[in-house]
Image (tube, rainbow over all chains, first blue to last red):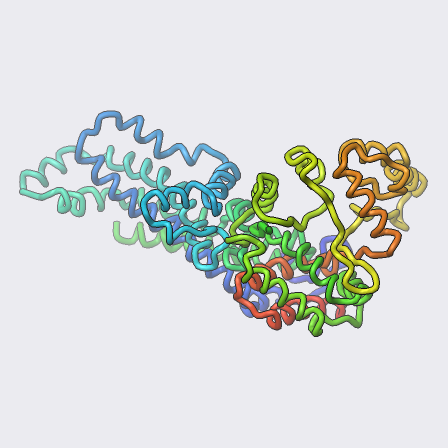
Amino acid sequence: MQISLYDWNGNTLATWVGLDNYVDVVSDPALRASFGHALVLIAFYALLPLLVGLVLTAILSRARVRGLGFFRTVVFLPQVVAMVVIAVAWRRMYAPDGSVNDLLSALGMGSLTRGWLGDYTAALPAVGLIGTWFEIGLVTVLLLAGTGKIPTELFEAARLDGAGPVREFVTVTLPALRGEIAVALTLTVIAALRTFDLVYVTTRGGPGTSTSVPSYEVYNRAFQQGRVGSAAAIAVVLTVIIFAISFGITRIAERDR
Amino acid sequence: MLGNLDKWPAIHVFGTVQAQTTPADQIRQLGFGQKGGSWVTPENTQAAQTLVDWVDKGYFGKDVNGLGYDPAWQAFSKGTGAYLIAGTWLQADLGKAMGDDLTFVLPPKAQQTPAATGGTGIPWAVSSRTKNPDAAAAYIDFITSKDAMGVLAKTENLPVADTADQKAPSAIGQDVFTAFGTAVDDDALVPYLDYATPTMADTLGAALQDLLAKKATPEQFLQTVQKDYGDFVAQNG
């Protein structure tokens, strides 16, 4: 907090600049854009995995699937691998001659192939999809655990009343999962906002500044460019945003209970 | 060819092209972040335009910004592309992969003097506040000694002090040593452009990606870089 009010290069004497560093966060278009990118990442890290997780849960909770434990392990596996390893692997898959392009060509969609991480429109979604892949496991396992707690009588009652699979999911499963959804959202949104390693390894914020995110800016300014004050200001703003969003999620989840 | 996913590689390529169009003393002024220079000049515009032309002609290969630096030189070693603008740090790896098929040349002489982007490693200095200046000096003597240079040469690195005294372990190594000797004798080295300011590596790297992807015109590119340089010299010049 204190450092964020100074212009300090990390080494020599700092000068007091008051709120200038914070004004920069709002007025510098590149910095503002980096916060925008973080919001886009929330969609990929939190909303998309939640959607996929809910669908998977709906299917899995209805049918007594054989080998559920095995499936759970496979989906959860990305969570066990270090993010840097994941980033290196995906960077290779997204390369111009990588497996993503190979797959597209094999499916007859050769016109879509590109160097994904070097493309101005595709790079941010490409990075985001890595996050989606990463978080689906966490969300699904959380939701599956939640459905396990729901008393079977509720399902039976719904079925006796003639509810179809969709109706059953909406009236029985979804309300019972409110707590788990809130936890999943909180974890994944925070993960999205503090994304650093993924961007650092795959694109370094490029092409141009199209995948730059606040955490990457914090690192870059504090340890590469010697603008420690500005880095601290971004970090403080980011912390406040994370706090506000997770507070919001918990409030919404608890209000309707 | 060029793989510019990592942002910094294009800085070397631009530096090399710029050295053909722009007088060396101007480049040094910009590269060392000294007062009084300007990025927005006809010569630098021409350099930036050349880069864009090379993109159009396919000299860099497809997906310049999507290809990583390492995959690029690896592909080059397997026969992709005609030239690779890179540095002595690839001598060992490329030499191993390509053997006698590999040669190393300085950029052609465009003006009176040849000019090549380069630096001689980490700039060591002895702080005026140190308690042990002798130990620091002894260390600098040690890493620039003939023995140390011999180790560098043997491991396919470039011995920057008294290069002529060292024997290269391979043909490509000999190319590199000769080229460096020529560059030093002719005072041809111009600095890496990202030396200029603490933020220049990021500014220039991102701006060059924009330029190569045609998100920015050569003029806009130079304005972006000029702003970084201008802000810095205004405060520190």
